[in-house]
Length: 125
Image (cartoon, rainbow, N blue to C red; front, top):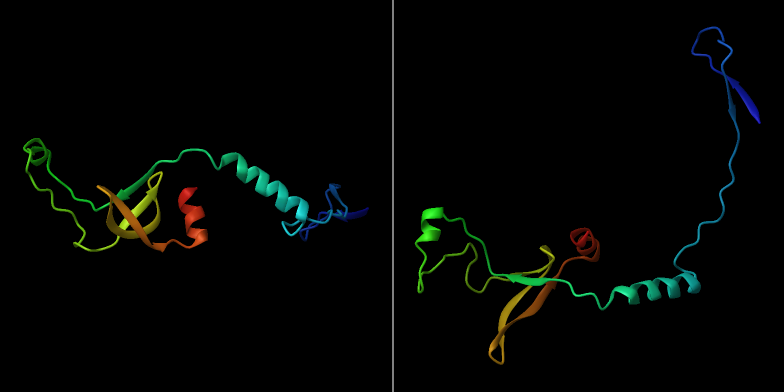
């Protein structure tokens, strides 16, 4: 142990700090086969959890009086151009974009662009 006296240009007040070195153990990385297996087992635990997925065609702002006057056959204009990519959202966070397609009699999404993995992780938070 090494003793250091506090001295900011003043005479010592008698307060002494004790400083000692610390040795850290080697940090394990995911390059270890054991840790990779453990990570895979942990991931397997959550793979069957249902997560809300939605496809967003666009947005708009409407006055309350206009919303109240909506009726069957009314048209709501969105902020996206026809044919523009639509957003695929996971729990409300952007994951990918794609084109609307028809599968049998249902709408579907053909993914054309996926967010970078760092952005996906940040968005899923």
